Image 1 (cartoon, protein in one colour):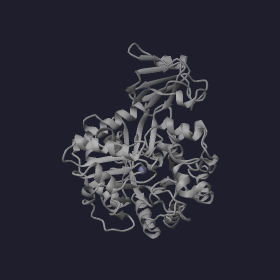
Image 2: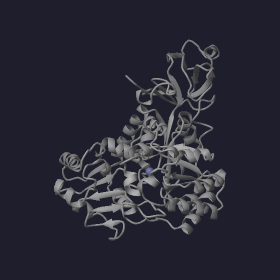
Image 3: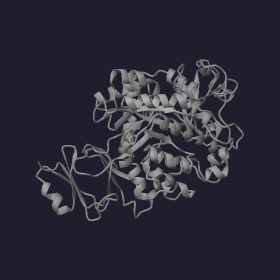
Image 4: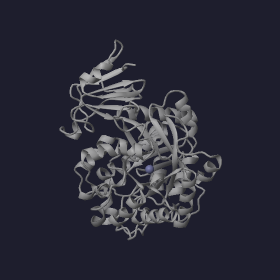
Length: 499
Ligand SMILES: [Zn+2]
């Protein structure tokens, strides 16, 4: 059998410098090598593409994102990421309310650390902007939701650390419960996924690990059935589902090459931005030490159950106290390397904690774009935890030094692997630094390893699925900001082409 597609005259930033061509057949990589050898697979119907020196990479894999959420932002939710001030955010919300009379208005992505006001959105602000419809606005990190009075009426949780009715602010579970209660039609969700998928392809992303959207799997299946899912999606279900899944014998890997069960997501703490990540030492912004959402003993029990059921855990742990709890639970549960349990974010991991993480064989799932978003002088990290902790936050270099498997993702803030990679090549602090090759691997083979798919995806190896991305230049020699995605292929099929 010959090749359906041959791309030649290309460079492989992650491959052999002597190679300059790649052949695709039946959706898989048939050959990688020099032009002369690869052209032996050419027949009369083979499409031949001259890449004129451009770079060819495995399709990028966002190892931690909120894909449905991204789709909803692109279609249904008001986008607050562009708001440069608090009044501007309110204007965007008010415009969305006029578009949907009588309906819920949901805004997403506000970030007060970029505003001159430097304060969170409050109930009174939203009441002024949207007096007659329920509305809520999700902070960029997803851990804080501000509501107007009508929106707040839908919150059933009692007043307390996570529910501040006076300010209309909900954190963690009460916030997510409120959002989950805003029911969108399946068709609206399918449209959101289709849009997220188009957006991902334009960014060179061919696979994602979906870390949210527990209630959206019906839509995922519908989108897949209707051929609208142009991205491979690895789904993480809420941790509470462990018993149901294990009693049914549902294990990781259930599904097909497009849509697959990967494991379970567990939240141990909140975020630095919302001052809810669980820290050893208090926040310098004077708001306590954050809180643990799951107790160590309870987590160890879940860890054991997940291991026995062949379900991988993805444990959200940002503060050093949350990371400590995760490591303690992993040890107590007898976690082994073969289970590849993951710790998500790891923002304030200490060198000593990372030593133990390496021994336990856990996978580090980190977000290089966080560095660009929040680290450095005058950034959000510094304002919450002070310059000393800012200087060692997001320590990718320490992770790599210890040989811990590293997967990169965006957490949907926003998606965009090339921007994330650019941020860690020249970061404000040394522990954040990653070389180009390591960064590209973390966004390809590293991410594939993190979902047990490295035999199938993530590298340009004969026999693997032909998920490919062509960049406009060679990232090893050209400045990152000038490079864009030119073409994206999923299983050998072109799903994006820059025009
Ligand atoms: Zn997340």
